[in-house]
Image: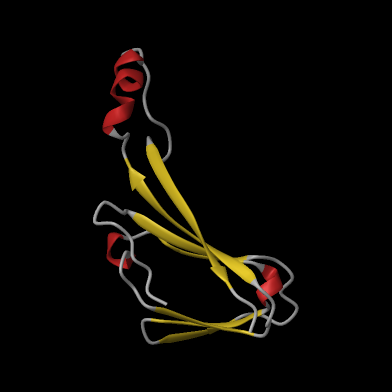
Length: 112
């Protein structure tokens, strides 16, 4: 699958639900094997702008219908938040990553 982030994406991520029984991930020539006994959802995150259009291959064991959750993070507040930003006192400072926007979408996978 190709992750199609926007040109504004500063980070991208995919959440693979544990029900898919993820076995491995291939990304940029790396083959990552999921540890045996993994009993949780898997978050594949890339906090770099160059990941907005990366191709990822997932190997999984489940044949049941499921869904993948995709998202991107953008640093800064959107133009629609201008009034909120203007209302901050001068003594307010952003902490950690500051203002961010996170956009999320799901992809339904049919049963095989």
